[in-house]
Amino acid sequence: MPYGRYFEDFTVGEVIKHWPGRTISEADNTWFSLLTMNQSPLHSDRNYNEKHSPHGEPIVNGILVMAIAVGQSVIDISGNAIANLEYEKVTHDGPTFAGDTIYSESTILETREASKGDRGVVYLETRAMNQRGEKVLTLRRRVLIPKRDHETMGVGKVPGRPES
Image (cartoon, rainbow, N blue to C red; front, top):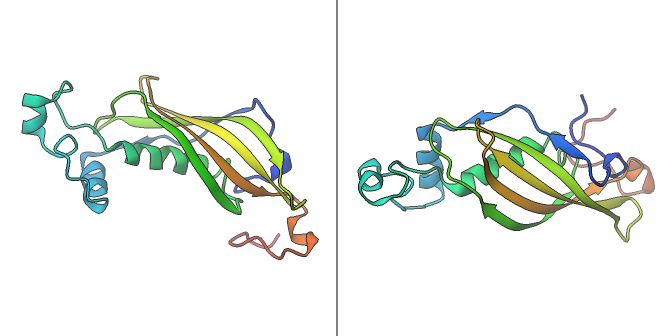
């Protein structure tokens, strides 16, 4: 199975289901919150949440959910990318809790050839759902993807791409 795609491999309207899912543990949430210096008790204090949160338990850091959804898409979308250009319109559509499993899918919204003829921009929306199929996150992003003939147009080898 190829790792990532070339620009020509994307079709507007295509829905790509990413696999596998990822179950988030309490430790994942704690470590991520610590690494990113997020001190909110909403992510780490069960007692606080039982008394003050509408959810009654800690919620998973939303940026962790975003990172997992983007990471799940790499093999299908950006594994061959030159660069991630933009993340936009990230919405946290529902809470995620320790023990939830995240599944994601992406829809290709637009493809546009870049001014250099050896690459193009892919605009997509990724949605993350929990194990019950409830949408918990939506994000849109633009990725710069090489065309298949990228290496033969004098640009050089795609960084990190194994020789064929």
